[in-house]
Image 1 (cartoon, each protein chain N blue to C red):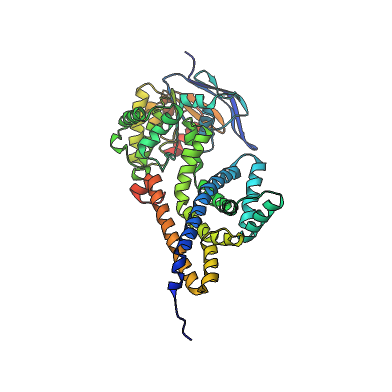
Image 2 (tube, rainbow over the protein chains, first blue to last red):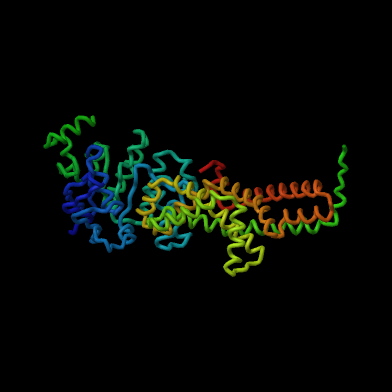
Length: 242
Length: 227
């Protein structure tokens, strides 16, 4: 089966600094892949290149059969296939939960308001927040906001979802509720690429773990590799993390 | 020395005062609509990727904000007529107001746009919204909600500053006052009446802006907190 996401020898520079030095990996449809690594290892940048929030200097990126690095790419078509959830939630503060979720369906897909509202109710049920549909983001806890952000992304029915350190701003209790939602998604067959510092989540939920170090894929394997690191860098990373 | 007030002497002119106040309000309404449009376009221009557009909008804003309004009025009014373009006085007066308030509006709107976190824009991009949709739904709407008090304050100031257009004989409230006092010889009373009328207009305008704000910013209406 063709990969849902594939990166081949991707190089990315910010000015003089090369943050991705030939990164290659694939994510199969339905697979959950966790990317771990130190801050500055390039893991978030790699993720952001997949939906082209960042453009790359060389290499190839493919998402659901589309060449992401093609300059003539239809960006909006690409982004209909891939959702993204951010560390800082990025809910729109002036809009209610329902409006946050229905904005993209109404604007991008021209979904009629009543139908969009129904979609909002459905995705909110999936993240366990159907009672918050008419609240404003500032009335929600961080964990609730992040679950709404996940629901907002789900409303566009993406084939692939990208998670960029989505629990890093949350306390352990709120982290748990967000991870639970993500685990349910994973079990439902969603293709997920998850940049995370939650080692327990990576070990338990991810089909595969990628350890990035200094802009390269350093070590990769099933979740169990975290119990048995092969490289000294991963060993050190895991030791410091605990 | 005791001054004998005689407001009765102004009674025959009540129609003129009313007309003047209505003209001031009409000028203000036009200037708010077009000034806001220019201000928003100019604020977007200053954030655009084109250096030419950035500089052009920046030049306009700095030029207007750093010269006196009355000089701008004379410049536009006599400048236009010397190149053969003769506008009706009302239109010319509104034009000077629009040019003036557009520059101030641009700075206020730009400040509002600058408060929008880049993450908001990235989230909208990731959702597949187009650039114009992002500008409208994710940048402009919250930006305007944030700067609404500053913006409407500026519009009230502009309404008061429109009195200066009496210098080119626009028939607004101050011009009416100038006429009335020269006919009635009751200068003190005339300007007291006009001051009260301006105060009433300002309060009216503030109330109208408040009501409009409640209408277009449902979040503020429901939560009452600043965004």
